[in-house]
Amino acid sequence: MANSVKNTFKSTKTWSEKLASLYREKIEVESCPWCGSKYYIKYGRYKFTYRYKCKSCSRTFLPSTGTSIHYIHKKDTFIEYAEFIQNEGMHTLKFMCDNFNISPMTSFDWRHKILMSIPISTRSFKGIVLCNELSLLYSLKGRKGSSLETIGISRKQKILDEKYQSRLIIVNENEVGEIKLATVGLINRNHFDRIFKKRLNNVEKLICSEQSVFANKEEFNFKSLDIVSGKKKQKEISQKLINQETMMYMFKTWINNTMRGVATKYLALYANYFMNYVGKIFNPVDRQSFIQKYIWPFYTLLECFYESFITDHTSMVYSIPTKRKWKTSGNYYFDLNFKRY
Ligand SMILES: [Zn+2]
Image 1: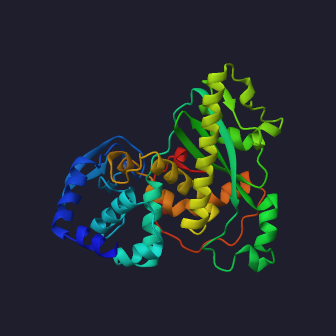
Image 2: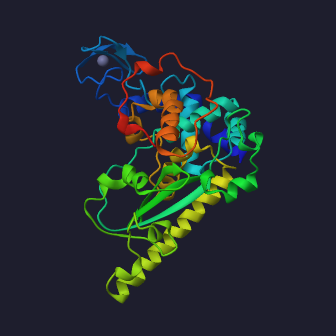
Image 3: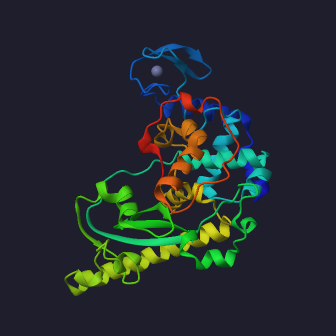
């Protein structure tokens, strides 16, 4: 595997052309990444592309400012890295370090920038929508000295305790599905509405399996299969519920085994990636990914967003902040719809 990767991807010349065409064909400018203004002008050339100047805030920028490749020195290698994930799926960080000759920190950062550049769907659901909840252990992976074990809570205690479960919601309309991080601890109607309410106005029925937490709690009042009329239709929906359970199982197995666990902080990103990947719509180097101009601010402010998620929407207490800081993070325009929690 290692050799084939090196042989296929190491032609620098081709990759520079590729980068040039990426700028030419896929990276567009729609607004100023610093202030969000639509009034900007071309302001000289820069390598394969133009520099722009904003008429509102007078700052200059490139088409890639704020995107996944912003502040990345080895842009060619980054594109190879992204295409590798697209074609081969996600491998361990160690595997990626060895194959692309990059440090563990770079590998970690690149992966997360790629995950952040996957668009989030905001479309409205229609017709019959299937819904379920899945739980994964609350995880502080990567926070030094912060694991629950070090504060005297064993893994076994965690598994048994409702409080230490990250709760995700899976929603399926036809074959297309989404998994969203809702809370840590017990889930309630507010957690669900925060994420989905606006998108369910055109839904005819919300169906869940009988075992689902949504079927057994009055506040949700979602319907089980028996309200669907007609034997044939019932059979069809029943099969879809089974498919949804299978998808949940695959996602959990992927997180726990293939990824060897994911910090709750990043879970929403991995969930979005997973559903895009299995739906065969994951493409980290297409136009849709480079329209995402908020990667840099999102990436540098993620810890702040995570803190407000934990504080406002879960029963956990935010503790042991990560120490990495970036000087420019607060300077960029950030569309709050881009937040993933
Ligand atoms: Zn501006």
